[in-house]
Image (cartoon, rainbow, N blue to C red; front, side, top):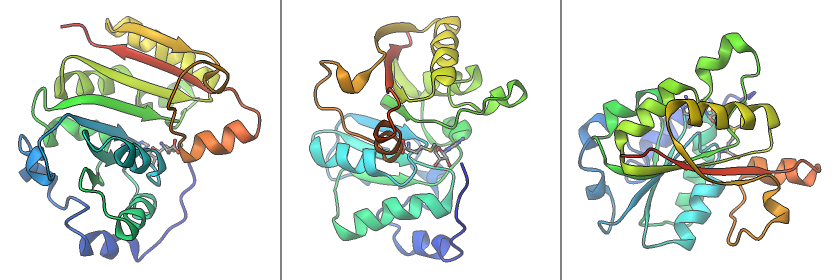
Length: 213
Ligand code: SAM
């Protein structure tokens, strides 16, 4: 994904420590203290500008959410949403998803969302895909036993790769949607990329899979 550089974004993130976690390692094992209430914790890795996680947090006040994004210039847009309308159950974290075991204890997370992850179509870049086996090992460690991944993408190649990756890792695939927007799935909350690509006529795929304990 090409990212427009916003040189002011880093300072802006630092100005709002109540919404953006500055020193994530000190919250390891204590994430619930960042929220108004102790309740299930769901994270999105590669949250982008935060439309999905913000709307999810608004719609589900009984769940705590963390939006995780590597790019400062992108996550700052998610912060702007929170500045405009605060949500007690949403926190933002600017880190690389590959390092999540440094920031979360074993079994600290109840569910991982991956939405429209960068496809990295070249085989030599496969290790960067958020559904590559090393990322799956990271999610498995921080997730509760039988913890789930919910993944959406318009990208057929990445979807097929991810189904195979989940299966080869030993995950159980619960349910698959090959055309989410023309299915009986209720309560779908669209991401920025989902809006963009479904408007262009791309079918949206979705899978729910879990790590058996
Ligand atoms: N989920 C959003 C959506 O559906 O609109 C954004 C999708 S965008 C194609 C993928 C996002 O994942 C980008 O913002 C990118 O910076 C982020 N990303 C890629 N690799 C990442 C990693 N290792 N850790 C955290 N975020 C990552």
